[in-house]
Amino acid sequence: MLKRIKTLLLNNLIIIAIAITIGILCLSLIKVSNVPSMEIKNVDKVYHGIAYFSLTITWLFTFYKKPQKKYIVVVLCIFFGIIIEILQANLTAYRSGDLLDVLANSLGVLLALLIFNIFFKKNRVNSSS
Image (cartoon, rainbow, N blue to C red; front, side):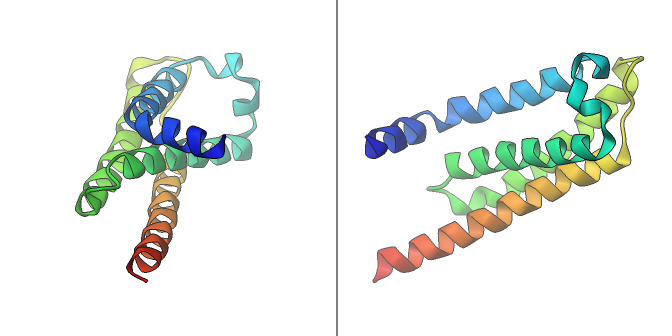
């Protein structure tokens, strides 16, 4: 059963990564008052970190066979986080872009890169032995 789930996830990683990307874009334009947990500042930063961690980790594993692309993925995810904050500041009258959100987004991305590198090195060591 677990092998089937793992295969299903691996076969659909690109769809999952795209869905998370679109989800972050849509959620970033929703009024804060419609998302109760985001009214608490510290919880909001944690959600930003988790969202961008999920975004980056799915894109990194999507390109797992091409690890040389990982830094391109990281740069694009950080850039996406900055663009989202600029969009919030310019397109919505009820939300503003926040430098701390950009920092939380970027930390989530860098944590995903760290986890991916640990997994990749461990996996490479196990496959060579």
